[in-house]
Image 1 (cartoon, each protein chain N blue to C red):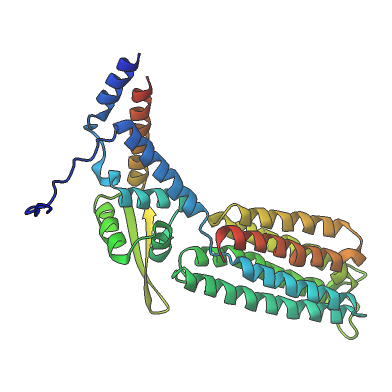
Image 2 (image 1 turned 180 degrees about the horizontal axis):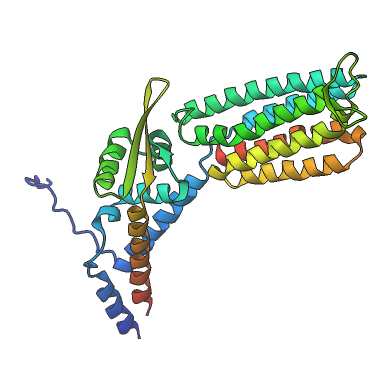
Length: 111
Length: 224
């Protein structure tokens, strides 16, 4: 029985081929998760939630924006430039698919 | 004598983490991030406590007024004090979290609250400043103001509208905020059904008691 469990675990350790690498990365996963829960969020609100730096958030947000997972809106608030992010429908679909994949991996290992 | 080490120690390979453990860790991270986002609120807890304390003071003053005009003046002054405290506390909390005041969570809260506040001002003027004559005509009140309808209607109306505004504004905040709005609405409905002389007590209970209780909880649970 123990051997079988070990075999299953070894099988589960092989990398999943169709994993979305874009949101598999922690910071990008955090951005997508935060926007899924909080709706449209200002850059500084998102930074506070994720506890990261301006540069780090900008770099990862740009990658998600390029992939069409999040939309970025820039505007002026009393002459101060503001940035707001929102999850796009394809970003939400990607997060849901990623959640399904993670759950499937766990289920496979438990069987 | 110890042998001199002429090259860095080889790094040991990290033990491989099973894929299901990594998947569980990713799911945990998603859940924690979503929870953190949901508990991030621009509503100032200590500001709410301060607003509640001034409202209790206003209720004491209002209860001593002999005329409706005096009673209205006390609550109008308290509304201005409350707005000032709320604005200052929100700005302070936004500054502390390095978040812009008029974008993101703060802007959503303000936009949600504003329609109910404006409706409250309009209805207050309608109840206080106008009257219905014997032939059902609607006219501007003149001379000595009795305005007893103000005492009868305004406490419930203010509590309900403030509650409605907080429910709408709180949709983008922690669940506690719309719950607070719901409590205000319930209290307002009770105030509308209760005798007019209980109006000030309902105001003290809502704008004082509820504001302090929820403010304390927000301050201790959600920071500031």
